[in-house]
Amino acid sequence: MNYPVVKGASYILVHAEDMVIHNGTTQSTERVINPDSEYLKKLPNHLRSFDEAVNYLPNQVYIGNYKPEDLKNQQQPWYQNPLKDADRFGKFGEMMPEDEFIGLIKIVDVFDLVKLTKEFTEEVKAKLEVHPLIKGREDLISRLKTGDELSDIEKLIDEQGAEPLITGGNTVGCVKRAHDVDENLSAHVLFENLVSKASGVLAGLNLIAKNDINPDDVEYVIECSEEACGDMNQRGGGNFAKAIAEMVGLKNATGSDTRGFCAAPTHALIVAASLVQSGAFKNVVVLAGGSTAKLGMNGKNHVEKDMPILEDVIGGFAVLVSENDGVNPILRTDLIGRHTVGTGSSPQAVMSALVTAPLDKGNLKITDIDKYSVEMQNPDVTKPAGAGDVPTANYKMIGALGVMRKDLERAEINDFIGKHGMEGWAPTQGHIPSGVPYLGFAREDMLEDKIQRAMIVGKGSLFLGRMTNLFDGVSIVVEKNPGKADEEKGVSEEEVRKLVAEAMRDFASHLLQD
Image: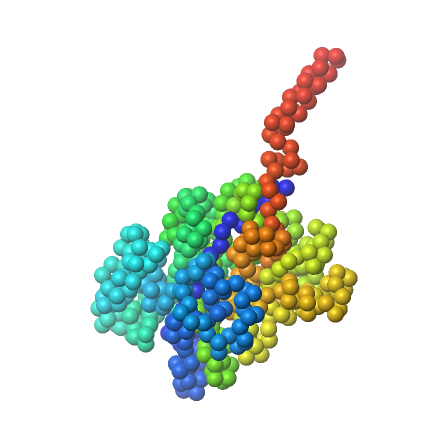
């Protein structure tokens, strides 16, 4: 079968120090419930600088400057063992500081909802004009315009409920509401949506640049973040995908949004692979921006343990799925795992549906998958919050299933985890850790003949929406490309034409005999 391929990937982070304080849900809720809390007073002293965030090993792994296996070589907790002089630009993407990102938010705003001060506009414009992916893009830079007076911005905040844009402890702009009574177009919601859009655009720009992709070749975009844009008549109608494609410069693309909580990226990857394999589109981009709501989500636990706030970054990613080129890793659309309505919610039932069921289809053992990419959350973040080491817990369950299936011995579980698992490195941005962080590395490892197969596993909590108590998840196997046949089963177009001609001659001869 002529499977689609993963032709490129990008990963970006935005350091959002002040957004932790002002826009993270944990902090916003605390200001309402307990505005004089000790946590809010201590919080500013636990925030990292941009350089500290750049020198944090898991962040460097995420953007591709280090590999997942490098995490094993540095003692945990990783925040206590920083790197030195790490680069903000990586093989897969980059880390952007908060001030530049606020400038990017203004650039992607097409309804003049974002107002920036004249002084800040001048400063950030100078920085973005030399950004490797934005310099020379006059269509983007020109959108910064000249800026507004701080007094006018403060009036919008005080009198019209505009959402402040703060960096370096100073108000440098705001996001206006777009409607007087529609909560879906309130300043707060629009701010969250613009952040998701801007981080998605940054991921898209990096995908094009880092993988030498012709943007004119992209025909479809699937956006799969956890936000939803719309108005009171269509609260989650979308479309982030086309809005992001417009700014990235994918002029020949259309697109739509796919929502599935944390599992959405893997759902979107399967949809993209299906669209390409069907012949509907040759090149499909799956991408997502990040979420300000989850900034500092476990901040109380971190401050209580005298840690820095590690959830200070907004994440994003993009992946290009294309027609089989005989080189890049293939997406095995025949080896898909799915948590169905009737699966059940026990860990064993979930993991059996997502892992062993697709392996059975391919007559594969659990040990035939070289690397499993599950919920790759950073244990530096989750362990102090009481959630444990999430990837390791997943690998233990997969190993236990392997023992039940007699694919390995009980005594081999730890070795299995070490060989087929990985340390977590992704930020806790909901959809961002779920399966896709390894996809870029998987592609590299297969191109370099280091591994044969990987499984991308996305899981989600549908009950968060209060519509169902069901759990969710899907998975897909990624495999080293064996080389492209001209047609399925190796039959060439010329051979097909000969077979058809012979059949027609035989049919004509039969008619003459009758």
